[in-house]
Length: 331
Image (cartoon, rainbow, N blue to C red; front, side):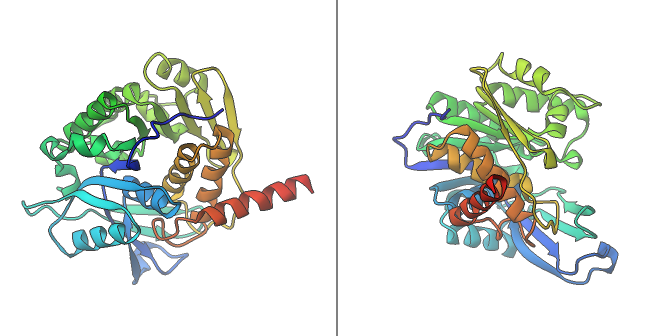
């Protein structure tokens, strides 16, 4: 089964939301208290997805707000350097800073992220800074959940969704749930469900869908799709970690993607790399089953590398890993 997009558009994908700085521990297998050196990368889920998509050959754009400082300039230069259109990235003039994420790599299973998200520039994107003419040039608008956690960013995203729907732009919602960004679980569920119900494609982990549905115990995929298919979504992708992922189409078809074995260095970055490769495959006209393979392969490559954005793989790397695994399974 293939997924249809409006072909006659300048951009394949425009993402909206946070672009920030990742400072990843250079020293592995030790707690952050003992870590002395970090490497700087661009981070933030929608930025990573735009970077991954651009590296795979899609024409990507970005809507966001950057701090008027060295970190903001670094982000803009990096994203522009990998081919992303940054004409709709606004520079904050009110002194808000760039969000920082320090990562700790104690072991492949034990990684954590320490976030500095107080009063960050990306959450001050205003709805007046969202341009209809820009959005209508794209096949896809990618929305990420963290941008919904505070105003005015929340209203800017809701406006962008409204403009996308008006102009026949597919809305892709990557749940990107970060509990520390939100006041409480009820607030998360209100805005997540509001956006999910208006989206065409919803992508997230089982735990993130539980946050959307405000569940305290693990939910059931069947219940999730029964709820969402009463609304706009016609494709829902639910990831189950090492157990792989499932794509549910409104037509009733169910597709399963297996996770690829890899030598895991860290656990973060998998979701963004999965989304960028999955969307690349869909937008390139590949079927949903193949898109699941691309997503899984890309995720397994990125968790074996030090960065998230910088490690986003090429089409050749993804297809090489898929081919290698299919040869093994046949052999």
